[in-house]
Image 1 (cartoon, one colour):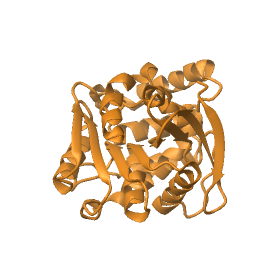
Image 2 (tube, rainbow, N blue to C red):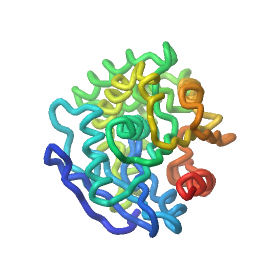
Image 3 (cartoon, rainbow, N blue to C red):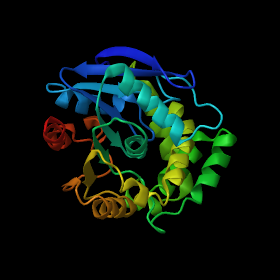
Image 4 (spheres, rainbow, N blue to C red):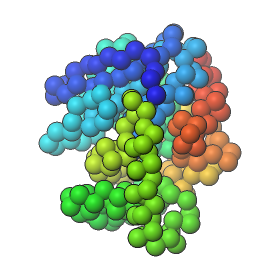
Length: 286
């Protein structure tokens, strides 16, 4: 899907971070989550582009941006976001899923963003989610079995339908292979495939581990915060949003009835951009 003007900025370690731009008005950066790229929120950008200039970066390792480097961590991701904010003059950020973890860390380290909306950061509260599956994901990825690695990541992060817990792994793997082949036949010129994204998933799991037990730290964020979540999202994500709401009593909170973790995405993958855009326009236009 083609959208807006394409540009790039150089991050602190010399890596190029590409981004797309659409709309007019104050700057808003939308930072995508795991298994996503800059085009994953292009329809949401179009919805809010009548009041904001929206910047859609490819996080490193994806699309227009350079590769991950040794010792990649949350600080590298914040540096990438800082470079985009400095180059564009944007002062507001929407972080989606693991992108929300980066937005939270940026709110602690940087003068910007002034306002930050976070959608379901995968923060582990107590024993709400086990990350023991990550070792299996890395082993499968290391031997080049991308479909199995994706199944492990999907099951471990509870991102598939509830029935996936009962479907045999060989069948899930076969369905994933079929989905990858189908996607590659229909992929748009600017879209990033599951095959390309699969290796990046491990870096997002790393962000989740780094954010563990930092809720009390995030409570010190001085930026204005909007908490967004779906009523149908996995239980551990709803638990995290409840914990955030308690830790940040001044934050606004919006829960979308009947929507899940894919609510921010484009319509063809189950997103509802027109619905989720309404509270974003209100928050960022205040």
